[in-house]
Image (cartoon, rainbow, N blue to C red; front, side, top):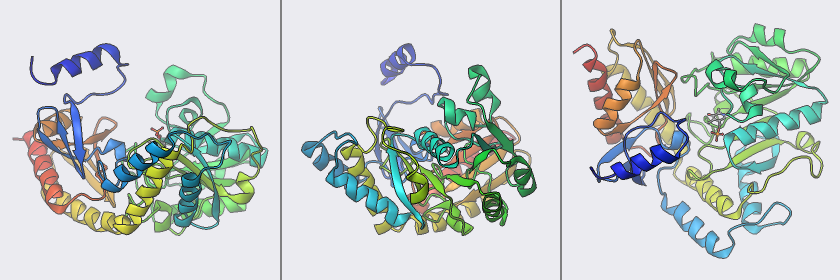
Length: 395
Ligand SMILES: *Cc1c(COP(=O)(O)O)cnc(C)c1O
């Protein structure tokens, strides 16, 4: 038996088979690299599905977590806590005004669930307009806002009251919002669907439609937030501020966290006991989150994502634009996609063998969400490997 095979066999035996597994046992990470159990090194463009924004095992997060877990490892929301207060304040320091109230949970999907409950309660209306192609999570509420049929169909009936509008189409949005609509939910850049970047005016027009029709705008920045796209939040590319914003991936150094931020008058419509959870605001996570935001600010990661992203995209366009295989190459900051004319799983598998870890979107899109600290030499490695595996198709 080769090294690590035992772990693969046991995971296969005991875990739900819901993930398209890469055949390696990952045991260590540092910055934008991970190592498998045999000591083989990889450049990591999966990065915890984008949650490892500041890089694997960042020393500041390690320090904060170690210190906090020795001090106090749990503290439910019914008590006040020192590190939680500082984390909340830090979140509000970086989010656009007038977003100034926070609800804490443990994942992206939970941050969306909270946003929708909040919108329904505040507006006293039932319906939500979501986007075709949108992704908001896998629990029943956020799944109901998620477009992809494969994710939805086996689990119907879903939560009623969702209307879908075409992404990037203000006229369709205007049509779908009615007097029973509480909110519109949008990913500023559609991630899971394959890094779909809206046209220059779309988000501003969507904001205007929400204002005109007096409904709330929820932006799901779970994937795009915290510097990923080259600004602290993707909505800042287009000067738009939502009424409610969802955050998660990347906010706690890869540890589980969900954050729903809202305007005060919106958040205040939830009364005591109307929402809550056990782990949200856990002090160890708050310490990791506080350290993470400080790292993002200190290391100027949004600016880095902008510069490195531009370098990455240029390189990809120079090296990987293989006409017979590649349909499109696009990106914003360090959120990148290479759309192929062929199914991509075989490229993903070959790239693993060549030391590069990649994500997919659907069957034909390779997606990359590297840590924002990725170095140019590491980007060069990714591009070289992609070029080789993509041209293998025609070679
Ligand atoms: C990943 C993601 C979610 C779901 O987050 P989980 O932590 O996996 O529940 C929701 N919205 C967007 C835009 C995402 O990318």
